[in-house]
Length: 249
Image 1 (tube, one colour):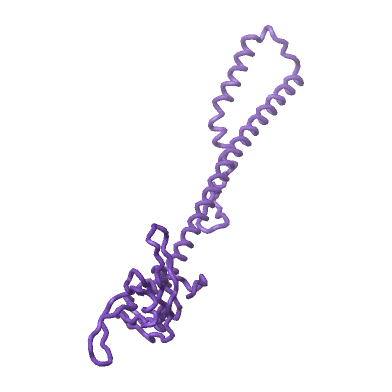
Image 2: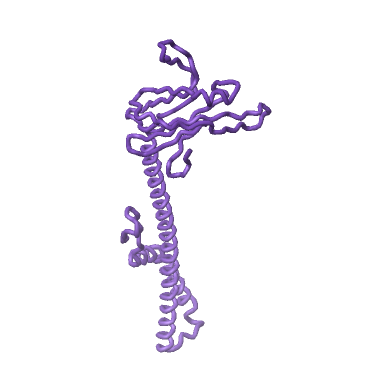
């Protein structure tokens, strides 16, 4: 057998060797040929007195015709065997190409997914929610208030943090609730170090827009830049938006 590499590395297809195939066919067929010759000899002996054997040229012509017939039959058998081998080889080669293409696609998808996971690794650890916390007023008193808490649970700092407040519109009739942006901070938190949180109090003018103020009434979104300089936005429902999608507050 001859082995040849196909178009893609790693794919090997076996090309049939016609000479070896002929040898195999001959090894399988010689018994039938011997049996045929033996049968002809026996028939010749049995009917030697009843048949008109003709002259020498007639015998030469008959033998030549018989040999030509046998050669044609043998060539047809070889061609049939070669066709079967070629069909099997083509099928295996097609299966190998299909498998190789699927494997390349799988590996490419895995690499793409890993690159995306690496790119989102820090941003996925940054969260924000509407929270109740204590603040120290200018007069030194400790007061409880509502606002945004931003948590950087990553191992690197985040920069230029901007807060967004959303009012929740819930009809309490089983229909999906919606949100309406009520405030976007102008001032940015310059940096939140790794593993730390920052609180921002809800502005009074926003708080006065609703009769109640709690985490059922307001939600928080946050915009920030990771250590690689990529800007991200986590919306009020907690979804992290890739800046390449065009989803911006």
